[in-house]
Amino acid sequence: MSDQTNNDEPARGELSGFHVVDPELYRRHRAKIVQMSNSHQVNINEFLPDGVRQRAMTDAEIAEELGLDLRDVTEMRVVAEHDEFPIEEYEASARFKDAAAASYRQGGVKNLYRGNPPPTRQ
Amino acid sequence: MSEVEPDWDEVKADIISRALSRGAAVARVGDPAALTDAAPGQRPVDLLPQVKSMIVLGGSAPRAGEWNSPRAEVLETVGTADRMSALGSTLARQIEDGLGYYALNVPTSTDEGDKPFLDFQAAAIVAGAGTPSLAGPVLHPEHGFLYLTVILTSLPLPVDGPLEQPACPAPECVEMYDEKGRTPCTSVCDIDDGGCLGGEIQEGLVIGRRYDANRCRERVYHYWIPGYQAVMERALSEPDAEKRKMLLYGSYFTKTMWSITYSNVSQGQCFECVKVCPVGSAQRELK
Image (cartoon, rainbow over all chains, first blue to last red; front, side, top):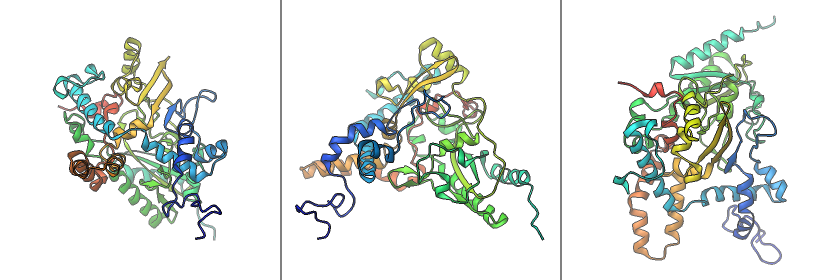
């Protein structure tokens, strides 16, 4: 097949017939890409003055900085964005909203949710 | 015979009037060249090469009754962003059919690389449809949280520009921060306690804002694509067929599938930071 390299390894992006990233490449660069991208934002708001503002890097900028292929960076970013929390955290989200809604019902802004679900939801 | 130059102020006023009469709460015009952070491919000129103006519409926020429902599940399933998108399509058609200029209602779906086609929030800020907030969504000083749509057009409309006074922080939030070191939004979804939001207020301004986008995605889209993927990953790696059945036929995955099916009303599933926000709260308090 033309997609095979000389050592019979599949060509990058052709592991499953569409562009996928080598898991080893992902493991090696995941943390850095998450840090450089939009995932954990600090002071990105547009109204902040130069020098204070820290906008996220684009995929192209990350690729250049890390010496990687742009499409690989995009794929690793997308996978990492969805790979941070296991399914248990999604269940926890439902309980968070239940507790926040219950707290709001009891007193609106004056009774803000403090992190522990009300007794009825524990 | 030379063509008479239209009165662009009148053209703009007519477009804005149409938008407002058809349900937009806010209609403003921004300079597309002001989106200087946009990456190549996501700049207005990449979507419509002839673009000269950017019309930003905001509206269709949840109703007061929905905000006040004690069931979080109500707000999870009443997203109405598609109404603004439909209004944008109507306006774009009127511009093209009536005025003969290009008008592109920016797709509200997802572009390649799991990104939006355009940063709607940045467009809203440069057009003055709202200002950035500690919670995250662009907030309009009167209406608070609004769904947005953006129409790019080759019409050379006069630009409104950004609002001069930020809607966030509200005076109540400054007062609460001075007393407790937190605002309503950072209290309800504290980034240091498993939530998404953090930041400080100094001299009435938000500084050091922190935002965990992945945590927010997991809460906003929790019965949706990311939740679906999380269950599928678990199910595909589960060797026990009976356990796989429990995962795939269980209530979480079932609700997720229903939410995806009714995707137009299920895309925004967490409103807790905005629910406690004083900006626009007068719209959410009725008898």
